[in-house]
Image (cartoon, rainbow, N blue to C red; front, side, top):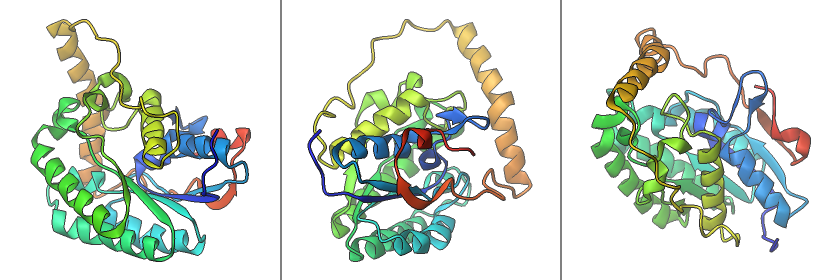
Length: 264
């Protein structure tokens, strides 16, 4: 594989970057950032990688808890993916969220690191929970692109690509990517960073036969009981799925086969 300049990669963010949807609590989670680290290692065997992301974190928490540790690791590549947990909350404030994201962009790029981020797809095509969020998603994506341009941040823009809302790329909770989705994000990020061989990251999957209405309704009911209910209950109690959790890879370490399935 063609060499690249990155030797110290740090990922910060929430559950998507932690890898939820690509693994389980028993075996650990892999996720797109782990997969990207593996791709980067093919062109730079000496790459070291840390993943500071923790599920359930809103943008302000990511900035407060992960930015300083990330800077202390002196990375030359950082991925910043934040905002989803803010988007789904009633009091979402795009300006406040983007102020925190842009501060992270600024401080990380000023340190000399290449920073990369990703936009959000239309999640309303996947989850009833997110159907009213489209205006928020469009607005946040617009702000992300503008902030990224101001600071020289690379952007994987997934919103225009229909494949990113193909249900086969998503896990059963319809909020987190599944293994195939995480693999596509990793490939898309590799393409965004200039790694060759990933031009087809957004290629569509073979067409699916239309699902019977009854099956669709049944799937929606199972989703509501298994995922929407617990999510709403946590919100009502002021709890987060990340309470009490710490980063799965807090230090820069070489990427190895054994690291592909870290313990939760």
